[in-house]
Image (cartoon, rainbow, N blue to C red; front, side):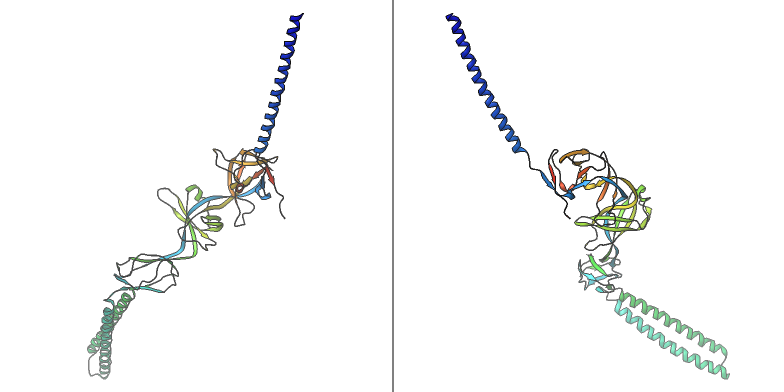
Length: 383
């Protein structure tokens, strides 16, 4: 009996020890679970606050589909002032950026022989005119004598020939005067158009050859985009079609229209040059790069602003707002164009998308990338 009692005591003690150990372990696990829950709750980021304009509703729109164009902006009216005679450039004071008016004197080409040649031609003309006076008097006298019968008609014919010869020599001398005067005027450099000096290609004191470029003048009041368009796209373009262009550094889009289309394709790449007149070129400069779209047709599709489609992953995707949380959804892109706001200068470029249902809420591109599952809170639209 004593042995059995001893084993019973040992069993009870072991059971009590096990029960105490279980309570200790269970308490520690409970405390650890609470700590982990507190840590996870601390990791949960607060909701991202967005305005109502940051959430777009996907809907069907009519897009004005266009042909993309790009190229350099150039002045519609530009001219080079060239040397028409050889000589030293003098009095050239205009520099890049200076404004000039049509006909304004901007410099001279030194031509020391032009002045004396003009004087020589003028003196020869005066001498020829004197000969005409002498021949005219002889003719008048001989005609009177013929009428009175004192001399024969042969003498009168000789006087007539002498008068005609003197008149011809005078006309030739007058032409020589005009040539000499033009040579003197060719040494004067004048602005052919009003505008700004874009380049000064010759410096004062340098000797310029005939047809050497002195300065370039551009008129920035009328600018145009010289765009190279592919063969297939060029067949869709017509004079008068409207376009929207963007220029680096200028946030507002610029309205334009096709003014001319080159009838010849460029040898080699077979592209066609289209010239688009800018409606507002204020503040722009020649040589700036511009790009945009020429509206050529229209289509109807579910569309979003192109800026809302993200491309920082292998496939384009959008950020959907579903039950207040962000989800990423890949999409297939279709035609691009301007939507219902096509008449506005700041109308965004829209793109047709596939893979979304009408009415889906998409975050605008200005929101930036958010992590999937992020909680979003949208504020009410302000009136």
